[in-house]
Image (cartoon, rainbow, N blue to C red; front, side):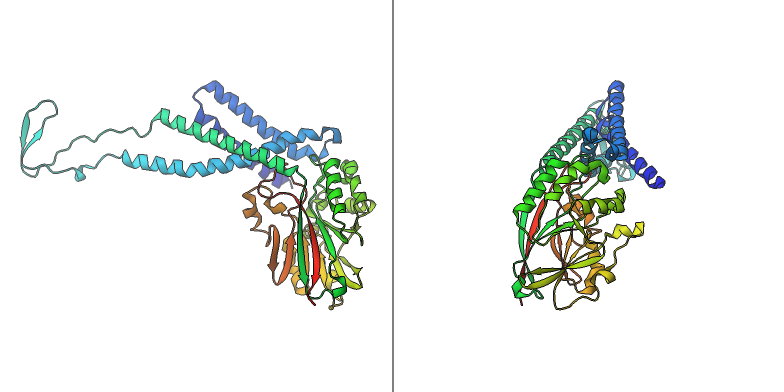
Length: 422
């Protein structure tokens, strides 16, 4: 962990040094303004590191102090993207100018016919021998115009700042908006006709912590209860902070209702803050914790198995997912819906004939274009996908992690209605 922290701090330092070069050094000529810029960038770095180090440990009344650090994290992310995009055309332009400024080699000088060549100092013509080569000095061309380069760098800096601040501001309005309600019908071959119409509300990634409190949790609970679901599936990452630090914010969860119950599986963040403490807290909040186990859900005369496995992060804490224990030995005539926090769990679950896997974790990428990076690790980033023959549904989640910013991946809560095809 110590090595990881050192590496993270070093990367953050290099990023901020790059930002200082592009936003301050390259855009100013005054030593004083460069010093002011260095102080500002350095202060942003310190704020970010302090937020990441102690943000979750602040008393509830001081949680708002983490906002500047997390907002700067989002602005920094988009500044980097825009500046990197501008690096390519700038390098190309400099290469072209350098080639144009290269003097013409003597061997490529133009031969002059026998006769004469103009004397630049007079109108006289000096005779030369046939085939002689005139070594005229190349036309001098400055390799760069300092004023033009300064103007270009300032334009890039202003553009990057405007885009970064604009996207961050827009993303904050999306992160704190009420989650979108998504509704889908799911055909299921092994579902008994009598159980047709069974409704599952899918909720994940609340990340209750410094920047998401009781007001947002109450709104999510109201939305879920308004769906009148038969089963509520809470697919991990309910908290970012230790349960005791956000207890008041979690209390609205006790009012969440599903006709056959509210079920929950661990996410990776529960292990970061203490899985045992959190699962005890979840039980007190009336969340039925599924730890490598399954339950029968009887509905309308039909039955489905609802299963839940620990998050794969649990393997690092002697609490790994156990697919054999959870899925083996069941009645193969009825369908099984698996709750697994990370979509990648499907590779281990598919051999057990899972009819539908419900997951979260990805946040839909949360901040474009981060979704492309998430896609390198997870087989499905948002919505429906089929992996190894198993249908997987991944919700964007109802909250956010880190920056209170969502760009291209609005928060959502999903209602899935199971339909019999038998």
